[in-house]
Image (cartoon, rainbow over the protein chains, first blue to last red):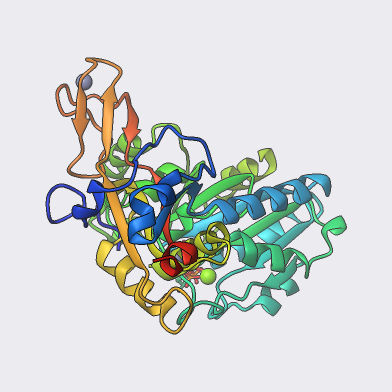
Length: 262
Length: 118
Ligand SMILES: Nc1nc2c(ncn2[C@@H]2O[C@H](COP(=O)(O)OP(=O)(O)OP(=O)(O)O)[C@@H](O)[C@H]2O)c(=O)[nH]1
Ligand SMILES: [Mg+2]
Ligand SMILES: [Zn+2]
Ligand SMILES: [Zn+2]
């Protein structure tokens, strides 16, 4: 995962013979049924049907419906993504009480194996619903729009101003799946190394804000913050960057400020 | 990572378009920026269609190289690494021109009628 996958045979095709038959016309509109059945297709018994649909089209349609429902309920939403253990749950635990009295927070928790479980987050004053990500083959590695849809049904939307969605810890998939959020936030921990933006550019490019977490550990690490910033700028020059420590709470104000501006 | 759920989505869309006819082949276009692992996709496809109406259906994938065009020097670069930089001048002001395709392009269905006749 996470690599830039180059096709090993050098030309990007897995099947050559296939190009020889059938009209290969990409300018055709959707659902254009080619008349191969009348020609070669009649002999071979096959017909090519142009589909031209996005692979994640169904996910995107459900995400759009989620977005519309959240907007209709006056809710702003943030999709929190990171590698495993970067500090999403810890940041939520600091964020919820800090926003008390200002914003009513709802949480969709895609991380069911956390030590800080949903009850603890709920105890801090947020409405929390778990999202079941184990429906897939050996557990899912991301949240998709359908999972979030199911999670929304377990929240009282009328009582929420800001919805924080903790995605599954993974630097690859979550960036691909729109769940209907207004903004994407990425939590990056300085323990992960300066080169992460270069290795996972799709994720870093998807983020509206990059939270640089675990800043309290800076004195203990050989970590070059400037080099990280250079790498991040190369991949995503537009991202808002917030440096903080979810552990100590240092720098949290700028994050809260960003959340309130969503 | 999520190749199995992609295969689920591909299967559903293909079956919809086939309208009951047997599908022999599905053709996809996937850009290099989509982080799909070709071997994993094929493996997950076998797993996903095993024992279903799609068993034996081939998955043909055109993997599309990632290209950027430079807004500074106007040159085009095919990216070897997922770094959005111009290969000529090193500039970061580039526009991605290909590589984020994620498309089910076509399917090939068996025609029951053609098989019966002659
Ligand atoms: N020193 C330090 N430790 C932190 C900080 N934030 C989180 N941690 C620790 O990092 C570990 C992982 O934190 P979590 O909040 O569970 O991370 P997560 O992103 O929710 O993890 P997953 O949901 O499993 O992907 C815990 O042991 C936290 O105490 C921080 O700012 N400083
Ligand atoms: Mg967590
Ligand atoms: Zn995934
Ligand atoms: Zn250039």
